[in-house]
Length: 423
Image 1 (tube, rainbow, N blue to C red):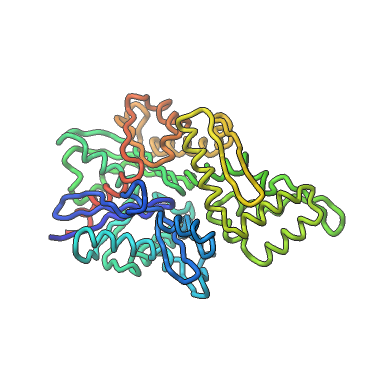
Image 2 (cartoon, helix red, strand yellow):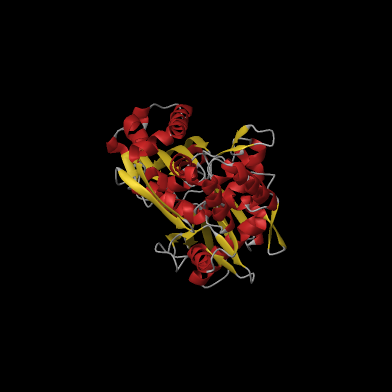
């Protein structure tokens, strides 16, 4: 019986479906995670070169006091030609090698479930890895190469929102036709698809004629976390610090440092001797040397991930409550920063506006208006944020809103896609 995997390698989480004999199911891939059907797309390599993935990586990272190398949000580097390799304990890893560590682990756990080797995979990809076409091509090529390094021989790609659409289509009665707008919100991108779906049709091989329009923007959950970091937390780590130059002029914190500080996957790049020397020099004349010390400790203790875990939790809480709190503690510092939903919505206003524009342009590209859309189907954690959900409600009406599992809809649809690419 031919088996194909549907592998959703996400910026934040990964998930896997198995298509065997035409039947598809999402399987457990992380026994350490509360939600076993998803695995955090993170890697921890300790000082003994032992490699840990997913929730176990987080647990080991904490248990070993951050002594080792923690990698996260690696999918975001796919379009960047500047990121060629990284050194881990003296060994060179190409970006594809790093991603392959995740894909190989997911593959092995899937093979343990089915009881045999699997060489065919349908992988998800965003509508746009990058608005730059050359970077987009680079990203897909790198992801394919990573899958091959992980042991897959035949790799096909399906747009992530199209995969989510197929998941919804699978729930329709046979012959029931709907024009559906899919909103697929990940950690790095927000993707949209207008597609014609028909119950009982998802196993047909060619669906390109049913896709009426595609759209995407490189703004999603991580970008919202960055804004919350900047507005409410960065002040503890030198956002407002001013220091004197050698000429006696007052200067602000160098932009490259601030930029990496508010992007959780870039904080490890601050652990260079050059940055350490720069911060030590700034602290001498800084008007708030304590904030610089906090930043130095954050970098040295490799606590950026844990800080953003606290920020993400506060963001998630704001989807259910009007107020939440960022709570974080490290040596000499305890943060208890209250955050109101209105503050958060103000911080992400321009991001929300760009998402709104993308939604409108995608519907227009399909040659349709809001009244022509029968169903709005959203997936991904960001789709729970009230002001994002309101973008759809205001345009299409609450009665058209549908929602499925936020984290496995794409993986399930990728499994359903197997018949489109593999006999």
